[in-house]
Image (tube, rainbow, N blue to C red; front, side, top):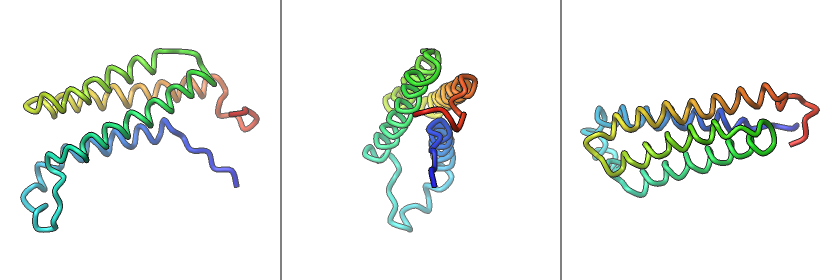
Amino acid sequence: MNIKLNWDGVGIVTSILCAIHCGLLPLVIPILPLFGVNIVHNLFFEWGMILLAFVVGIYSLVHGYIIHHRSFKPIYIFMIGFSFLVLKQFFIDFQFWLLGIAVLFIISAHFINYRYCVRSKCSSPHHKH
């Protein structure tokens, strides 16, 4: 069985999970210590999630560019979003606003990349990857 992973889908899902994590975290902060969990201001966790977003995004978008559509537009949009994702680490007072902007740009980049790939017939079962 040949399973094809949709990296744009993975990028969208990880962006949404990141936004949910950051949005719900303030609501569950009071009970986390009861379970021995410390992901609040855990730099290793935060930078790990940022690295994951970068790796998934770059792999997906560069693959789409090289193999399918030759448009830099999704990569530019992703880099804008990724910049906001990094900025949220340094401007803590604005982290929720910066994260919201980052997620919108990153999801948009993956969605545009996916549409460009489909438009170029990359979803065809006869297309070589």
